[in-house]
Length: 122
Length: 502
Image 1 (cartoon, each protein chain N blue to C red):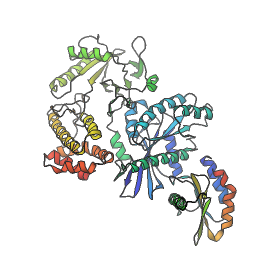
Image 2 (image 1 turned 45 degrees about the vertical axis):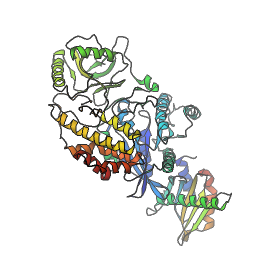
Image 3 (image 1 turned 90 degrees about the vertical axis):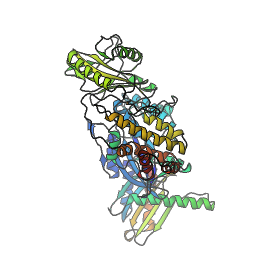
Image 4 (image 1 turned 90 degrees about the horizontal axis):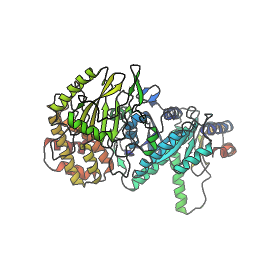
């Protein structure tokens, strides 16, 4: 796994490419702990959001198992009225969580920015 | 031990940072705290070395819908503080072993890892360990492949490269440790042994209160094969792990070892000599016989940071306080005589197998030592009962032990010297009059505030009851048994404590 400094550099590249960037973190799926964080707003509790998102991913995995689906999650996109949240699996045990301001960005920009740099996070 | 703190709705786990002295444990915690945006507390340091612990608290992550509250603690690395290290590791749910990977220091890490793993694997469930290979930026650090291969030979553990001074890799190691802690939580939950309630230590101040009374002593982990439960302040028959032997100073051929400088001249370390002159040993005849016995042991006292000298093991404790060095034999003998009088006056209160020695310390100086044969303490008895007895038997044992402690308080109060009354210093034979089994305080020691019976029972039994609650599934049955019978006031106190105090 890349070192924290390298992880932060990658997140900063995503920040540069994703207009309306609010926050991003690399999260350990099992514990919900963050491995690297960056936020532009102090009112965005990235630590808590990352932890609860890990629960979200785990629940989704359980649903897939219940349905007998053999595939794996690539990403999860959640569109809020004012924000877009993307959860991108970068390995079996870690995911990138990205939040952007919807008024300054769109789904394509978000996906493109993450796809360009996500490989460096694993 | 992990616990669900119901009041706050969080899971509390403890991650302990272990490692040889100066490997970077404190630096790691500082970097981690900085990265996590939280504070670090270090109660006491001396010359940049941790004397008690460093404490960081972080709430993050999630486990089954509950946030995780991590108590992150680093241990003191010095051998003399091993007692504190052991107490801190006792509560670990995962351990990060910080290794100094410079070629001059890496062997210490291998030694410590072997010792640590003996203990972590003996826990039920086992405590996970991740290795933090630190100081990777140093020019003389051992090549990465070599380190990983060497550690792999000891045990198949995760190894994470770090540079604690810059924080590199520190967070990754921490998150890995949290994962290991959660593995343990799951195992406990599956076995229905995951506790609920308040953590027994809720912050650095409480932890400091727990550690401060511990004596300073060299202590490796108990040999799991020795069949003895470890005792705080005392080592088992496997006193020094074989891996630590090369760290223990040995006397030179002439019987002296220059180990410390006092008043500008090096002091000769005490080596028990049954042929030493009469008038320097108390009791005169029995003391010399005890010296014969003690001289067979391979025990070399060490100088502790507070200036006391200490050795323990193979059924004996040796102790000399920092102020027990005398510039002449005459002044030393005066103190020896005064101490001997105190022993005689209290002989019916003291455990057998005690001798006081005035030993040649070199340079015309003399040092006063007490040598005490280890006796079974009340705590040893209770620890054994906690592990083996049924709920009813344990309840009876707790009541009897509390009454014994209160009788000890009365017995010790009549003395003209302060004999501390604790579960560690009171004898464990409930059929006999309670005796003092600890180290004899020096003449003129401050008596301190004496607690009333209820306060004494509460002070001594509350931590034990908390441990019991975490370790016994049938704790409520024990509580019911404690509360069910009408008994003495002491029995009522302990019943009340168990029902409401933990």
